[in-house]
Length: 470
Ligand code: CO
Image (cartoon, rainbow, N blue to C red; front, top):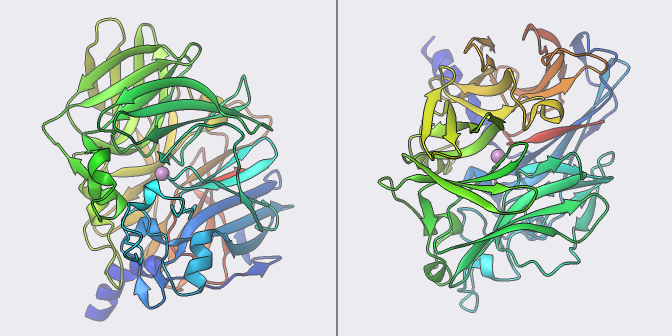
């Protein structure tokens, strides 16, 4: 039937429908068998509230953050969801988008013309990613105002306060973890006449950020993530740049102040982790990227794997209309850049076919090291409709997909006491457009076949990232 076909082509749009219900369920219906060794919780953050005071947020990245928690114990799965009580959410509850965001204009009064990134009224809606630092759990966006939460109850505990004087306007929600020092590693950009990037480490249990490296920059690039190898931190400056002097009074939403300069190169800025010394700037043809997959050194070379777009139109494609994204997702290629650190040459090669995003690896054991397996979402004709495992050494891939199902980021969890890189499970929250609900999918990471699913009581709007916390 024509209607069925039409429904199935657009079924994913349910993932862009607000979910304002906060839920608790001690036991979800499970089909299949959840491994008994799987103990802990997959906690994800999602832009769940996309309509505020009768107005739709302009962009997917601006929905109000809700935490979703799937708890695992003895083969059973529990579920809970709760909004993060940020200032932005407080405003939203009163029907106001007071803080704007990535691409949404705030309700701005005449006295508030200054770009919010420079004001104390900056958005604190942490809808992008989560991290654990020592015993603290934080939710993050790209303004440097992480929000701490209780990973069991999902209760909001407040903003993380720093004891240092590091000035920052933007950051990433993709920090790295320095295993040796037990530090969260991230970068911030400070906008000024001469702006700068600052790479820092935040020790577990500490409140003062340790500056690792600083680099002045005239027009900072938009960077959603960065790379870390054994010896280096890597900022990949895409030619999507902002003039900070124009930013302040442009009156435009944050990201619209950045301009794409397709004829300019990407610059890999490589810093030594141990000393902060700038090792070099390595240029290659322009591309855009949100997510680094992994980085490691091999001989005198630095290997950078990432999901590369031709240009930055992916940002434009994710503006929302009443039912979903306005544009069509452009393809993202899993690509390897190999940098000759001494000679300066950069070469690139695709590692697999298909449009791959939201990469995950066995981070704890393989980040900064040569590796075999990465897990991704894959896009079909209309939207993300499959999960893909890639053997980056051989280029072979396995896929999971099901009719009417739209999965999110695949999170790898290692089976304790095992050696194989892909011994464990891959967890993903999948929207089932047929039932109108989401379910938690458990794949065997080795075979990439389903071993269990647990059905949530309602649909969960599409989100970006989450973490498995033991
Ligand atoms: Co991201």
